[in-house]
Every structure is written in C-alpha cells, then in structure tokens.
Image 1 (tube, rainbow, N blue to C red):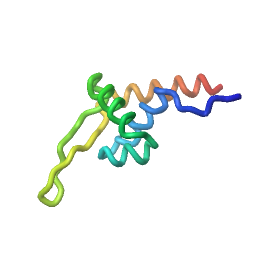
Image 2: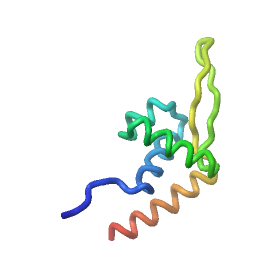
Image 3: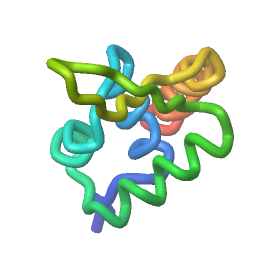
Length: 89
C-alpha cells in the first residue's frame, strides 16, 4: 500500500510556496492543511534556519504578522522541488 502522508519536505515546500507573496498564520494553517501544533513546529523550524522571515504589517490602524520566504528559503524551495521530481521518477 502507498503511504498518502506528506513528507516534511513537502510540508515545508508548501509553506514556502504559500508565503511567497506574504501570508498570515491563518492562511498557512488552512491552505497548508495543517494543525495549529504542526504550523507552530514548522514556522519555528523555518524561522530558526532563516528560510522564512516574520514581518509586521499594518492594515487599517491594526498590525499583524506576515511570513515571507527569504532568499535562502527560495533557494531551498528550488532544491526541494528538484529532489521531489527525482524521487517521483
């Protein structure tokens, strides 16, 4: 039987893709199909390794956090895609 679960690289790649134009936690949570616990784990991992950066955005007088990939994160994404293509072949 084939394992339908996503690998950690697939989850990290999905977060980096979703955050390309800036994404809030809720966007990553729902569009990434992650639990809150998973999201916290992956955000922490990505931020500590400087693959993702946290920005403060202001909107109508209120402010919130937004996440965007760093240059290092975008390079990781390119390499991860190459690996996933190779493994799928």
